[in-house]
Length: 221
Image 1: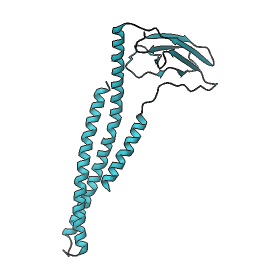
Image 2: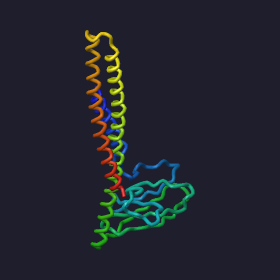
Image 3: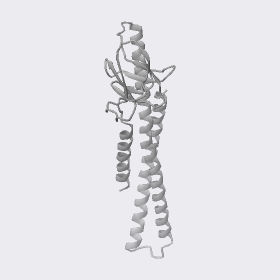
Image 4: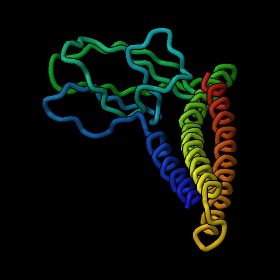
């Protein structure tokens, strides 16, 4: 039962972890409400990375949006700085002046680049971004075996204590035969075996968790 419980816990934790950390598109293509202020950005080509109001941009960072997208604006915004990034195209930065109300529209056709060095650099930037994203996922995923290890440690201590209680009952028993005495002996052996199994599971999952966390930490930089 203990092993089944731990397996069930791992499945639940894995499901929650990957559901929470499943990759989601940064784009927001849902039409805005009439009372909200938005900047709608469309690009050619589509699925271009959008960085908003950033200086000294690191393109290996996760973009704020992906075109086409609606960017929600503050009521105080009078302008917004938009930087577009797409492999094979020149990086483009535009300062957009905004009206006081309603939705503004920006349609950009990116200038294709034939610079092989630039394209190579852009590929490296995206590869670095993907490594960082994988690292973050691994860090989150490491909590599954680490939590499982902690639970296994608690379960181990419980079975150890149960085994001690059985041992004390056997040693303090006046009658050293009969069904009750045999049951205590069987229970003692069973709790010892379960404690060893839980300890093995705990040690294994702890090791896995540390390795996965370390790998994620390295990749996330």
